[in-house]
Length: 474
Image: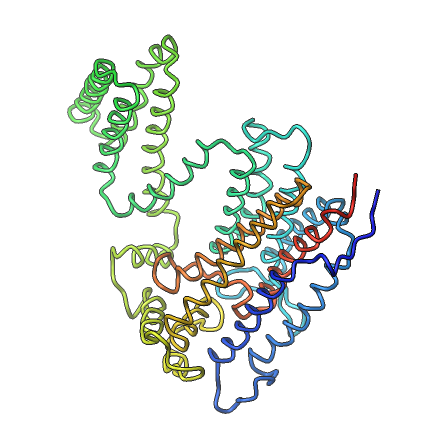
């Protein structure tokens, strides 16, 4: 049964105000980033800031339209919308226009649209629709794999374009799965994989694997306090490893140290499996699984980094980690970005006074590196205010998600938060050299119609669901 609810009266005004502030600040910063003495008029539609203004007006109309639609529409037509977006992601691989090495765009005359930007809200809807069903338990393998499939299908298609940055954004949805009951072991595994990824690139693989093995025995002792069992396990490991190393060194001379360690961990586990089973030593089994997974992951990362990544992608990661320096090549963008932000000092150089901006030292100033303009012209104080607005905005969305009565609305709300957070973190992280340059926009700030529309649809669907949370009694 439906009750009469004033949607415009119940829509969250604070979130809309923050949205308008970010869009307006973004527009003025785009103007500053591409400022041209020959085109001083901010409404010059031949320039990016003029075109962005048109996108902003269209965005406001779009937002109003989204709020007008009945909230049940987003649940009832979720799978149709998701299927349509998957279809578009397939079609763009064939008919799309290639820009910057990625076949990611549909071109309609002067307008270009990027399906991957819109696939984020469709994935959030599909994930919410699936997880909000009755008797859904993310601790069950079938449920988890289905949810993961909903996330990874669009991510896989986008990776074929190839668009590494947009692909990585979809992994943010695993935060939603964790919020909805995914096993903490899976979440911890994901965090450890990220840590191991960077350690693999920084530390010799042999030493890293030996450190993991030592750590596993230390953790096993601290948890069980049974030193005899730990020493027995260590003895089995050393005997097995010694035998395999001897065979490799004097007979086969082929596998190498990494394969010797992998086989040692596997065979030691087989020997100890009887103990795990008889004593029901669940915690030791978990430690062993983490150890085996860590060793296999270290070797897979090493192989993928050296054989699967393109040269420029490898160089970006190496520059970020300080493995190599290339201020005039791969590291040029980040180096100029840091110079630009650092030159702003405490209060900045003043609006339209940024020298790095005026002389076009930083590539992609109005898109991926829009935060440089903030740092140079507004300084530390301005940067702090912008980051503060984003954090307050994200916290507000979390509060709205937690007050939802319907599971579908809450899950979708956390999908919105996860996507916006990963964009915010990676984009600003790129600008200050904390993460590799993978080319994703700062929400509501960076130039681009597809990204602005995509983020707006993502956000305002949630605001519509929130405004109508008491609209239906059943």
